Length: 232
Image (cartoon, rainbow, N blue to C red; front, side, top):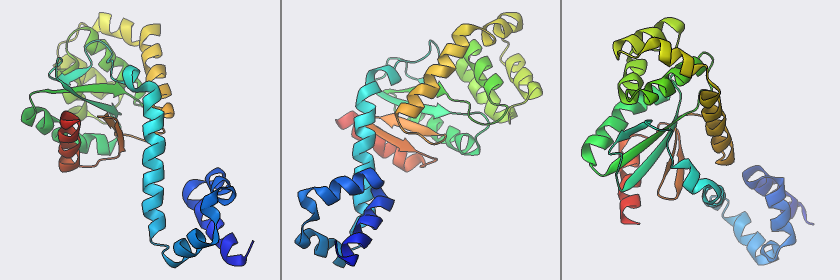
């Protein structure tokens, strides 16, 4: 290999990982013309990385697409029979999730056919108890009310969870029993497994119309994704 070839493989390794660089190096794409073109146009590498990552995400999603859209009973916002489904992986201790909450509310208001499936994914310290109580609220038909109250009263703590639960008038004895149940534990473990399979690194993360998105991407990007999913 020439020094320039080594440099290109190193760049590809940084962008796609070493396995991807090895495949590229051993494939026909590694011929001198392709190599020269990429070396002369290094600005293509970020675009290549984005497309590669998007393709990988689509492949991961295809493995769990049906499962990820099936909500925990009651953990749905918007139209429960909506034709378009947006899945949000969220955490009550996540600042960006809190920032995204009014944007999701606006999406629901502007899109009567939108069903929002919330997957509780407590990855921040202290969030698990809030997620467990949210599932308990879902069992009592009060998920949305608790979900909203928790973001208003948070960050998660024993006091804020209790206040949110009382504010929406949960049956507290029943809620506490369910929050500590194996069923609640299985749901949280399931959501963690789905997040790992989808390659998510944090919250909020989204699934819609065959696409996966990460971060507080804003109302406009979410609305564009909803429109694209409706048209697909």
